[in-house]
Image (tube, rainbow, N blue to C red; front, side):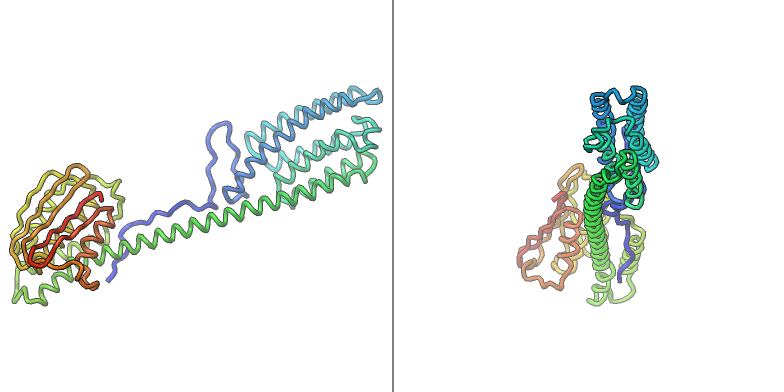
Length: 406
């Protein structure tokens, strides 16, 4: 008989593929739905800073180079207006990316602006520099291609890069000069694909590991729940049936009726009992529970030596169950009508001893099929982070000691 699981099992971690809420404040990067894992999002965040550095640094550097390389054939107005527009756009680009991330709209707008400058490069760059392929317009176009590859998917970044390449070729008057940009596009796209592929593979491995851990924890919780149900069955129904089979009740008995009623209440409580970590549970007084456990033994006189002790409720439940099982063992096997329960402890800790002067036994000789001590006492305390010890030898009685924490 196995009852349904008695409490929720918390997952080990949230799914790696889930969305992460952006942090509040002015310095956050916008969340991009197309980036599934944390590694991919981290790459996107770094790509934003890289794009800002390329655009702002390029604007400052190339403006200085353009001014220094200008000749009398270059109109001052033709040069000043585009360079001012480039600087203004670079500042706006940096602000927008820092505020909202590498959105496709702003990245494509950057490609359009750089393409427009490339088309007009014969008015901005001396002809000798264009012919020698040493124009500052070439690295400026490269920055746009890099930003496109790191920010957009290939189906969009490659056509946009082709627009920049064509604009540069037409603007220079020698389309063959754009060959270097084609090579840059292929290399950049390939590197970004490899990096992003590795990031997604890492995310998949992490996600698989977390899912495995979640399943292991769920299985451990299920098994712990089954073990607890088996302990409760052993301590209630099986114990009662054993006493009936041994002839402890020759006829109708009020003691049997009350014991069966207690067993039924325990089993009914299993199905709806919520699982709660011991560290989160409220403290409860151990004294009345131990008194109730002692009173549940009909043919055993139990002497109590109690002190005020408070423990988390789940721990108190298990410790009292251990004491009850120890007292039932005395009643059935010790051959004595007396036992003593003594408690030492305080707030958050306890040591409880159940002692008798009965016939005793050899714990090492207990067959593996006997689960009373191994599961109902030792197993219970280990499950809640406690400890149990049984000291006994033939003719010298038995002392069961349970303590929490271990």
